[in-house]
Image 1 (cartoon, protein in one colour):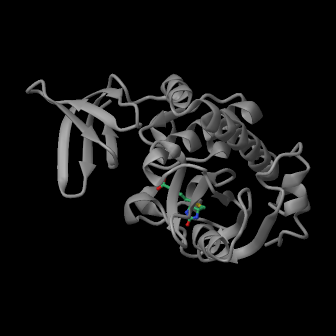
Image 2 (cartoon, rainbow, N blue to C red; image 1 turned 90 degrees about the vertical axis):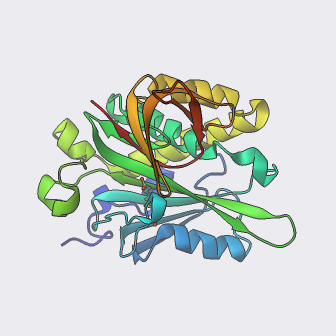
Length: 271
Ligand code: BTN
């Protein structure tokens, strides 16, 4: 297997990603690893050491990639983008709900910019094509001294994986951009586009609040209007996903006509 230095044309080396950045803060410093437990964990360590906003950790593979809701994120060598970004929003922690939706919009826009592919967002931040997932986001908060905190926005994208790369347990539900488009993509270019769009949306969020981001999310979403089962903790609820509230929570209308609001959970779409 080629290591990153040999496979320069398709690595996540900082200089490869930074070729696609035009100024800005996000990605101006990138810490690169061939292999890591989890880029989110490493970004949290760096944040605790005072790592600045915009600092990025990338890895060619992860041994303990983490997904949402305690799941693992399958992270094979050289096939995906495993990237975590430190953000230090000048906002109170209660004001940052919905931030994770911003990440999903950025992913959808970056993929569209680079490939022309229109993916759908399943609430809150899964990227799907034909019902199969190729990317997701894990946002974690790291409390620091006093009121300070940082946000770690971790993105996993299956870029150049082939069907047999996936373990059997997810082979029916996971896909990659290569499987969808029938060709390999330059991962660094997509990572660069993602950082650019993330920064653009973040600036917009700080200037105008969450509302414009929620509107964009709705343009990409494949959840609202659908009948869904939502699992949240031990609770399972069936109903029609009708709206987002102003914080990004999903509103689901049950058969009794009552509206339930979910701030986290796993949505299964009834096709
Ligand atoms: C999900 O959809 O469940 C979220 C997946 C997030 C995976 C990424 S890969 C980079 C970063 N590091 C991790 O350990 N997880 C996130």
